Length: 106
Image 1 (cartoon, helix red, strand yellow):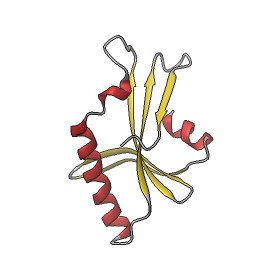
Image 2 (image 1 turned 45 degrees about the horizontal axis):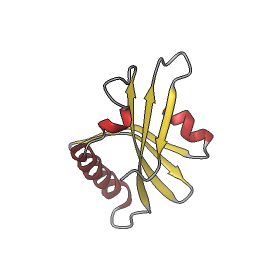
Image 3 (image 1 turned 120 degrees about the horizontal axis):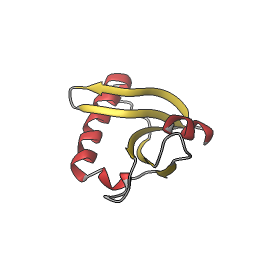
Image 4 (image 1 turned 45 degrees about the vertical axis):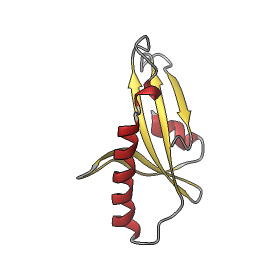
C-alpha cells in the first residue's frame, strides 16, 4: 500500500524489505535523483498513538546504519543524494485506511 502510494507520487521502486546485519529497510525508492529510504508503520487502532510516533530516535539510528550499509554495497564511495521518509498507515486496511507521509522525516 505504501509502495503504491509513493509510485502514484512519481517515485520509482528499487527494492522492498532490504535486510543486512544492521537491520531492515521497508522500501527503497527513487524520487528523481534522490534515493529515498522509507520506514512504513501500521496501526489498526490509534488510541495508543499515531504510527508515525513509533519511529524513535533509536529506530532512526538503526535505519541510518542500514542505509549506509546499502549505499556502500551498491554505490561504493559515490553515494547519491539520500533522504529518509516515514509512512504511517492507520485504520482498517480494506476500508480506506489513512495514509500519512512525512518526507525527509529525519
